[in-house]
Image 1 (cartoon, one colour):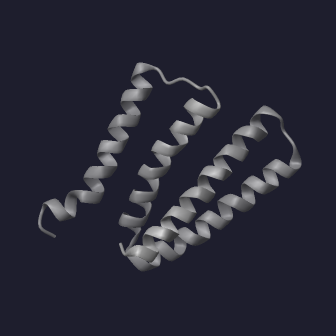
Image 2 (cartoon, helix red, strand yellow):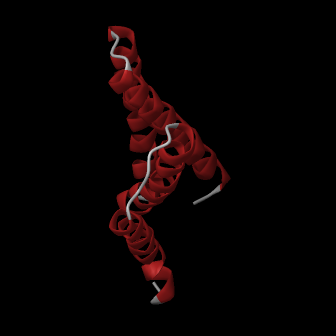
Length: 112
């Protein structure tokens, strides 16, 4: 992935994180404007992801996006919204990060 791909991935991730935050805010205090904003943000993020899939492939684009969002969304949920993960849930997050890293880095490790 080149510099522009990394920048676009960062933009898409920021949009998805904002969408997730607005969605959580909507769940606390429902308002039609929040759900419309959430849908618009997720749509914009997915349009950027379509470009990344075309330019870098589905495996790389979605794997990188998934791991970045997994970590960032959990940080937002834990720090900003005060949510807590149990031991099994925390272990699941760690295992998910390891799994995505293996999928993403696997081809390079096997010489492909």
